[in-house]
Image 1 (cartoon, rainbow, N blue to C red):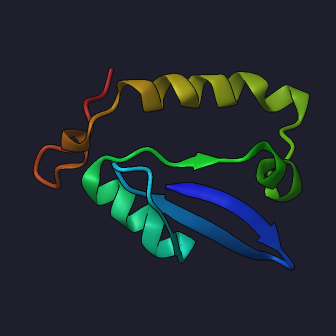
Image 2 (cartoon, rainbow, N blue to C red):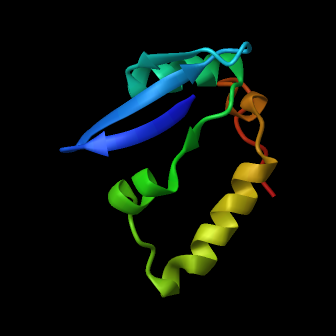
Amino acid sequence: VQITEVKDGVFYANLVLGEGIEISARPSDSIALALRTGSRIVCSDQVLDEAGLAVPDDQEEEVEKFREFLDQITPEDFDAEQGPARD
């Protein structure tokens, strides 16, 4: 999934199929499909610059801790019966 642009607050996306075929699709549907299939979601720097949020310097450490957490979790951690593993 490629999030390609944002115009007047509206996001646009493409689905890129294995043969290099690109299909225009709603970002919400594209992201849902990517999550179900384990596909990558990419976004252009231009979209991130326009729509992204700046993180204040004092929050960088918290952001890094959260990134480390995200790197360690798996879909199984969200199993309703087991829940995420805690340290």
